[in-house]
Length: 356
Image: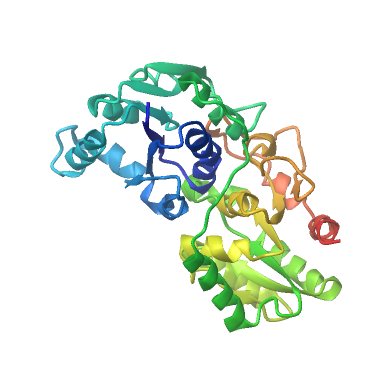
């Protein structure tokens, strides 16, 4: 068992949650050949990992689109993917997809041992299954870490990692130098978006932009720090609104960095303030302190990992929380009270505590 494929088509956090599995495979089988099948949008997260030998980047939506049209659809995407995976002759795959299509493709590609989760009978093409109704009571990393043992691979550590190339680190330092960031002060990053995988419901994970602006103004009064706004192109409007409401100029990088550059910038911060989303887990994997704000999602399951005094999560813990359960967002009948009631002073106190 030397050729191993990992499958995770989800977002940034989910892919980072598999990095302990990658490390466990490489430590247990030093001469292993490891492939990774991921969402194309997230592929920069894994491309810099020296333990990986082959990346298969294909959007999750592409698989669903092909399946809707026909397994013998008009595009060569399906054939090309199957051919490429089959060519590698993998011995085993760890399938984190929760989707029968990935198990079927793995089976057709000749992967003899297919290990994964059986959620709503979607693991029917797996050879080794863990039955689940959803993720709860423990962190996703703990769930993911249960799979390697089914192939005889021990998990010595479950801490995330995010290897960055020297080119990426150098690019981040050049950005800091260009804007004069961190030359005399601490550097605090602000990620006011997040939750891209939620699509139109992403806003239910966002602490109000006005609160982020108020937080920046209080930081400027109480802490000697440079503020950097972070986000992708879709979150640029939020960042622009916050920057416009701040009483002092901030460095607004939202929409100006790709995912790889974002990872580099976050790795240079002293602290990140963020909603529940990918940047939180980039920071945690990079050893950066975080203050994170949680609303509909359970921080026990999706929060920074492992728990440490470097990370502070802020949540109201209302009776209606969490309202995202078993991969379903039930909607909010409570006017986002879980987020609206979190005060600027609470978040500021968390920042001060971590920067002492």
